[in-house]
Image 1: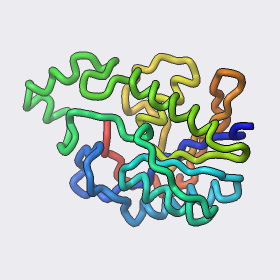
Image 2 (image 1 turned 120 degrees about the vertical axis):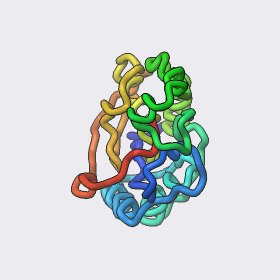
Image 3 (image 1 turned 180 degrees about the horizontal axis):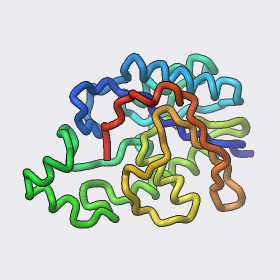
Length: 211
């Protein structure tokens, strides 16, 4: 028998006082509030029969997976398929004003439906489908937690829902430390629930790290 449910967990708030797009850059760990957020998602899942934990290799994801790992005494398995999406603005501060000041940047927005500024949504969808299938079959029973990033989780949501992958980043329903749970029925993925265990910590949180 495969897993009963898989839970995609987004990482908590990152220490990012300069508000840059950190993407896949090294050295961006959780803030103090981000650690609190990770504790909230861990508490929400600690009562579940978590049999396996996977994480993106990025520091913020591993730090977000650690509280759950400690609570349920399950080690963290790193998997590159859960990684952040690639984008050309990594390491910079992006704003509408900057785009107008630097017209050369407009080339990166020529096709937002692909998107032309980074990893194609279809490629993210495929690696997340592969990851979900792997996680689903990685245990004989119980549930699996996968700690990842906003765009990766949101693209999997859209893939499972059978809706077009192109979207505007501000439309994503994938808050910091949120939990989006799925079940596989036959050959199809069905979203079971979406939760925000750290709702009360979100209002002033900095969430500008990726596109």
